Length: 417
Image (cartoon, rainbow, N blue to C red; front, side):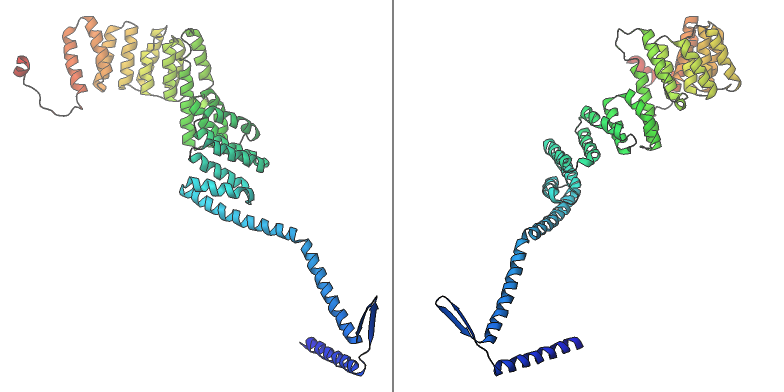
């Protein structure tokens, strides 16, 4: 405040001094050029010179600024385009979230060239095009993303593979994923997508090679991994029976055993897989190979289903098979499945009386259609037809225990009918 006041006083003092000088002696200036003369006082000339200087200075400033409007205009246009792109991106993302695919593709595609993150716009616009069934539009947008963001090839190719999978283009999806897997072998999203693709292609061999990495990277929940692993090896075991018809049984057996040996250790005791493996061995004439596998599994982990299967095997040494089964009676004397298996093994050894006893004991523990069927068949061949009729009646009554109570015709009505 004091400085301004002091400056004002100085200006007033100088103005008063100059005014006094102007009054005392205005001065005289004559400017002549050719036939033109200009006469004026000194002070007017000084004022004109000062005003001219100020006007020239102002003109030079305006001219200097007029040279750089291109840069400023360019920056202004860039800021304006960025604001418009941001606004359209928000509209596009909102439309995408609401399922308005056409609007989403339009806004996101228009904003992409000027957006802060063009990759996001292109990928989201490609998704919107895909949802409309516009495969070409989606692929074109992904191609633009490649040209705009070459460093983001992983994200772009993964998006491409996802769209191919959803279109049902599983072979193309697999080809897209293979080089990505080499670059990023631990990428969990990539692993999940590759697993889905292999399941759709039924390429169980490739899936079995992928499973250890899926488990290591925890790409799927443990329950899902176990289910997938079980299905994969079950399909591989089944595959060995589906070889060309001209394939010899020995070749099939070799392939089946190779597949079984490739199973992870924790699956060697999986009951459904053991049952499948043994059943397929039996179907190919490999009972002698199946018997020790099944016996070892039963010794390690008792299972009624496996015991039932053991009784059905036809090994080259049925007496040893029967002796092995008898050892289990000590720990499972009242097990209906074991008694049924012992009855069948006794028949293989032609111990008819013991077989009848075992079947009857099995029925006493738990009546079953299998036990009744085996006993009736044996008695029929032994000539005990009356007992067979009684057992058939008992078997019918046992199997009909779950039937609802319904009115039945009286005997005389049935005879008349």
